[in-house]
Length: 168
Image 1 (cartoon, one colour):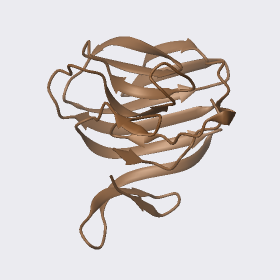
Image 2: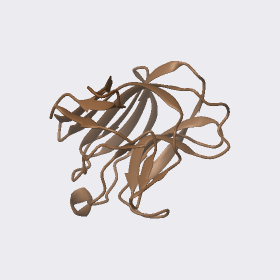
Image 3: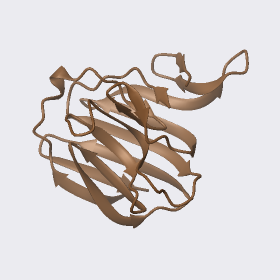
């Protein structure tokens, strides 16, 4: 997993990523990205493949879709607004729910890519090809990650907003 260093403090949050799941049918839940303090706590944010082989999105209450996993390249997007939250696959809304009432202002956990940050530990690590991830907080672009290899050959992601390189 990669620790993005970004700690969401607002539920007005958008995460958009382009990726390709490269595994077989998941036998456990795998995360494209996310965070939560512990197994049964909030606040939390997830874009994942559930072990029932469907895409899932959500902030606090995570909702499943009827969209089965595949190994195609997809643009996945989770949008949290003041009254609703939405999950998109390739531009189509596939999940919609009432917005979370959880206060994100006390959150201390950064979002992880390629897995979920569960109380500081990487969980549900996702085998995938990664193309990009954009994170918006309060409608402002705060991270834009693209895959890169640094000057000594280490593979990671470059945040184009802050010009920082992140590795596993």
